[in-house]
Length: 186
Ligand SMILES: CC(C)(COP(=O)(O)OP(=O)(O)OC[C@H]1O[C@@H](n2cnc3c(N)ncnc32)[C@H](O)[C@@H]1OP(=O)(O)O)[C@@H](O)C(=O)NCCC(=O)NCCS
Image 1 (tube, rainbow, N blue to C red):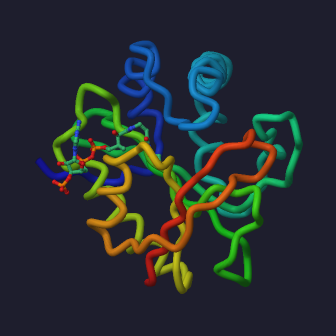
Image 2: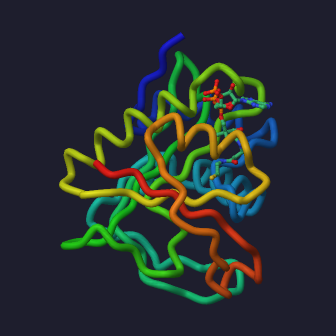
């Protein structure tokens, strides 16, 4: 089965809401906090919600890191990993004028697949498609970070040409945890 990266639209929301109600989170850091926030936001204003997922000019609200620090939002957007239903999501973010990221940003690309559709190659395909979009946007490389014990995500990255750059301590805003930083030259 092949997947597409779908720009979020109202027609996708019933499937997205279903995945959230089944307990899936599109956010690997804030987990169920984001699940609850997205369900509430869709309930309040579905049009504003789909628009908020596509923000290449960073018009949205600032970002609250896990320790409560508030930082400016980077330009970026999310796409649904779509196989006829929402199978997951993948996001790209960047800084204007440089391929580098601030130290508090854990990578240019993040992704999550719903548990009931894992192991089908969806994340590997989605990352390949998103790397094409990053290249088209003029980035020279992207960084992707993974937890040292997240072997499946590391396979997704290396299958797409990612090379391990370093083991590092994540920004203190995330707690004192180690991460692996991969780089994909574009
Ligand atoms: C990481 C994640 C996105 C992978 O999604 P996926 O669609 O299942 O990944 P793929 O099917 O493309 O599989 C990638 C690789 O992992 C392997 N794999 C998949 N499930 C596995 C499992 N349970 N155990 C071991 N290997 C597994 C696949 O065989 C594939 O390896 P290969 O290229 O050598 O064949 C998904 O597990 C997920 O959403 N996890 C929670 C969120 C997360 O960790 N996101 C990444 C943060 S950096």
